[in-house]
Length: 277
Ligand SMILES: [Fe+2]
Image (cartoon, rainbow, N blue to C red; front, top):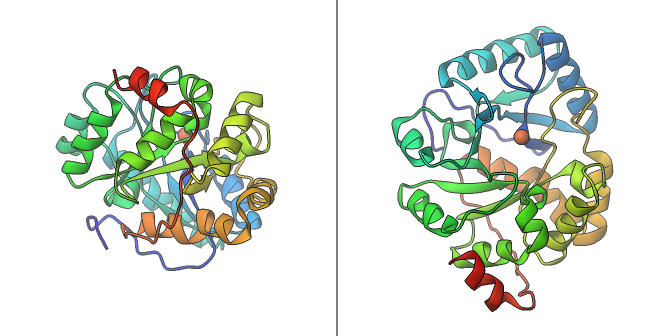
């Protein structure tokens, strides 16, 4: 187990949601404890036994405080036990790529997933910044690994999804993981996100399926439909890995058997030059 005394052990075969804004009153996720508990009940109904709480860091006005996040995770876990809801919340954050993110990570002002080696990293909405691969390399050199949050929602990656192929194959298996979101594959996040998510799945470029839930009603923690749709593209075994085995490995800070065979898209060279200029 990698991490600090604040991390939690996890060894359950049920689904685990690696990206979820369930913590009450921290960011634009659950507004209060009632909403958080409703989200928790929905998640259990969907088949989850664990959720990584990933409030925003560096996105808009949100710079969640690590000690506050730890405290609210502890309180919510206590409340879940009191309410007989069989779900464990793990600490984490969704870190937006900013100029000082590496500094923030080394200063310890950003929480990694379950305080282990994996960073849930979000790109700016509009672009995949030039030189991003250098940032990834620096992060890897510091001992971290990356889970890239919902690249299918990034405008530039929607235009040129082969960027993800280049990144996944540039690094060793497991160093750069890709998380897609349930509402992308169900079409609820729009046609571009759906098309891109399908492209990534069809080309063996995704590792994790998560909900990125924000509330019980707007962006709820639903997975069943997405899981079926993903299974229809990559098979049930892979869909299970993306929601069980692999997220569990990330939560536990382990290196899993990432047996993907990414497919090379057409016109990669031209697009690679543009991206890595
Ligand atoms: Fe998120």
